Image 1 (cartoon, rainbow, N blue to C red):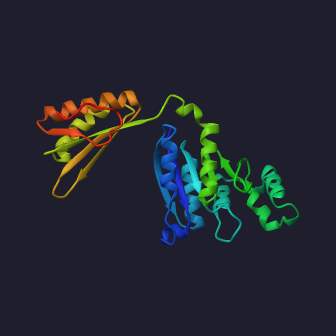
Image 2: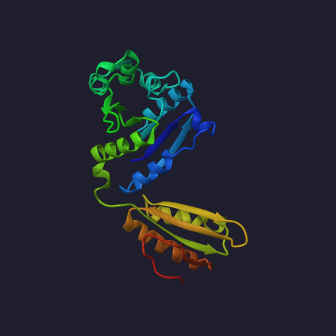
Image 3: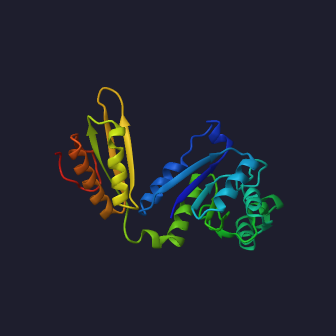
Length: 256
């Protein structure tokens, strides 16, 4: 199953604020043996948000969407999600109860708008201030504020997707290859992917005085261990030298 992230806000696109969500998403998924497959950044443009959500809702990915679920004029995500799904935007009864409990006699119409979600949505509890997010299918809409969004994302994963990470963490292992160009390793890479389906391969060239290629794989630990051994053997057979990449996670053997 693929996991994606959508991060919304003009403040990110303009550089006024630096995004902190993507590194945290990667960290949170990795701690559970999962991996981020893609990430998209969007400004506060309703047409762009709607078009993106219409596309991602049609797929089967699990998507975490950050930002734009408040009630100010620049918050468009709730309405865009409803339009993308082809449903109405309505006050969710559980969200209304949470918001009323939060504000008591200080409740206002504008505050209740934060509980207007697409028809068919379910709420995501917010442990910080009780203003919930919402889910629509496998899309999870969270606030832009990290102190709220990150615990809510963890709750979604632990509540709905624990079966995907019960077997253990994903692994990654890499070697440093010197004396080779990427093009000379392409056939070896394709052969490795064919022999170890489900494993992802990466090739990261480093330029400069010390030129080398970081060649590695990530995925289920057992397959990663076998795949990196296969790559090592293949690199040696091609006549190139390799060494372990520092801090490799699979405990491979020393340099050959």
